[in-house]
Image 1 (cartoon, rainbow, N blue to C red):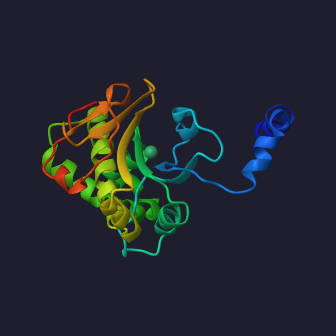
Image 2 (cartoon, rainbow, N blue to C red):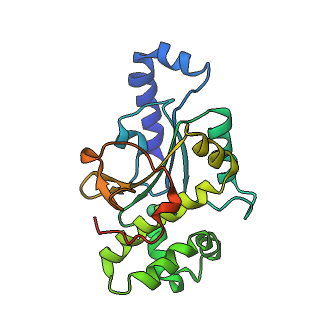
Length: 225
Ligand SMILES: [Zn+2]
């Protein structure tokens, strides 16, 4: 905790004090253009990854970057998504998974969750991912299995995202784009799902365009990244 207290002192003395007008303007309101949904994992820093600062990303985090489908539960996720879309009018929503995700490892080895009933219950919203892996990737194991699970999960969660009425309406109108990303911790690379190629592509080589129709991703088998 002492490290965090020292960090606040550093922020006030070196960061805030160098740009007080910027923070004063921030107090007037926020106009982020992107909702960034990712895992709670401490190794992910959305602002660091995307070179963005305060006011630029509206962020939703939980174990496994999971989005319960609309109507399944009265969740904080649903409220956060609705607020981002309706009140803030974000233009893009990113669901960003990551390599070595503990939630996805738990999904694959549910016996390891015996003492974490809340986690096990939460991962039920990723049951489609588990079934996709079980039935379509029996040849994978170890890191390759976890990575493919992370990839399939962001696609499954994107489908859940589309069940939210505010999202579905704006996607249909063409003023909201959905993106499936995977962050590879060990290389710093970020991959995005390209529905035309039906695979994840490193963002440095990808021309952005969003995911026009998640339903078209049915039948895919993702290639390893
Ligand atoms: Zn994770």
